Length: 273
Image 1 (cartoon, rainbow, N blue to C red):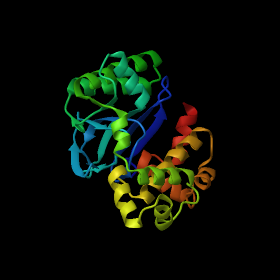
Image 2 (image 1 turned 135 degrees about the horizontal axis):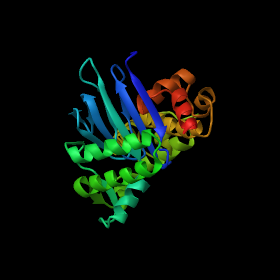
Image 3 (image 1 turned 90 degrees about the vertical axis):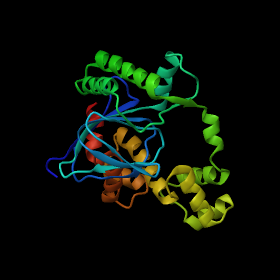
Image 4 (image 1 turned 45 degrees about the horizontal axis):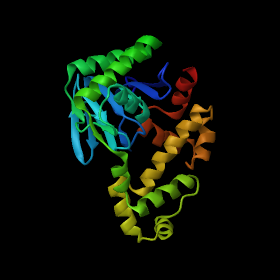
């Protein structure tokens, strides 16, 4: 454990981009999602992760790409662990770069999860290093160039309207209820009654639409809200209460399994940025 390290911070010049540099040995990411994209360059070791029901592996030099709101995990394959640089740009930023390039309208989607593109990996790593060193001009220039390369060579495009239509009304309504009731969520039976379906039918439809059962989805939106409160200066114990976690330890467990660092370390690095 003493060999593990992780630093998660906000991009020095682009507040809608987060950066992570980590080396993990025993740490395991639980099933989780990100609001934006995840572009990670593996620097050492091999990462194994579940993605859309498939177990994948990525070794040194590989790029791992996870689309927004896509459930995935992450863990080491070998005892020495794995190290990587992760970049998390918002959907808006990626779409803005695509529009500047004159690419087809719609939400960019990356169909391949593990890419072997040395030029793109080198550019993503350079953009990450510039962000790590606080060089705003180089960091923003390299980041946009890296995203442009990824979009030109690896992205497909789809309209957001089709994605929205694929989610059943009952699931959309259930999600709205969970967002509104972070602290005092209903039981599955109460949630199903509120949206007009049977409990098991809702459980099955919810998992199919989101990749997570309702209770796991609730913990994800709790972590998401906890990040916002920590960004605003909230203390972890207070944030745990305000987001419905039983205590700070409960928040820490779910937060680290999703973000990679505990809430206290996250708060300190974001405050420093």
